[in-house]
Image 1 (cartoon, rainbow, N blue to C red):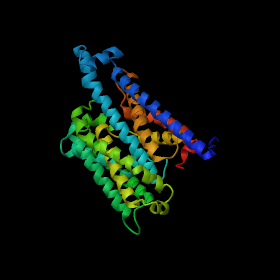
Image 2: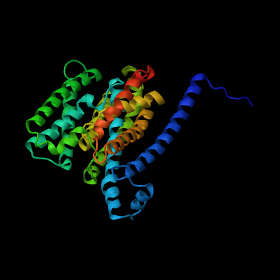
Image 3: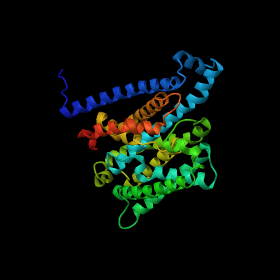
Length: 347
């Protein structure tokens, strides 16, 4: 009986597959540990036994309030927002063929923020639960506008034209949002933490209504991943493989709108998560979009929650908004990754 000899390419594929499985298992364990740490950490540090007792329905009234009313919704919000930003970033980078793109490049975040500013300035909205749907509507309107502008003129819309339209519109809406904020500082006082990016005070009354949209969008991202792999080889090859290029593009735009728009609506504009996490996933596990989407969906919530925990304990009992922490943590990490040749490409 002769032994089967593997070619170098098959060796690499098998090694990469094994590394991916180990990586997913390791991330799953880290995912769970981070959730537990998020329930424990804060200005009032709770031991694991107390957290477990509360989750079982016991514990003191103070412990139940801290864990069940404050930290459980906050942790769930962090998991949802992180997964949404990570997956949206993976899709945008694959779609635009730009390893340094992020969900805001299509103007989604700017559209959501501008809609919130309109609601606060002219409709008297002050509570986060009242502006979530408005932020989603703003994200959708701006994204559709970007696509229409990118599709105008000769030929179909392509990633470069869509990116340019998104950056231009995003800059315009960001400027108008800043103008509205400065025109009436008192009205925006209660929305200050949202503008900085925060998970504080996000209850299930805000989370549950948008959870089905995020779940469907993440599922859509997994379905789009094989088509994005084909598009990476070129449009002609993708069409020869039976991929509907226009449908893939529309699907990516719709999915990114829901993911990034919902994340921005829940937690405000949080930078670097959608930019950094797919970069790390691609560097460690290769360029298969199916793997990158899975890794991003697990790694981004871990990084976001760890950043939130860091913001809670650094200057306790006060807090640093998670959006500020991710900027400080993400910038040096991204610089290091960008300097690595393999991490700076999509192939």
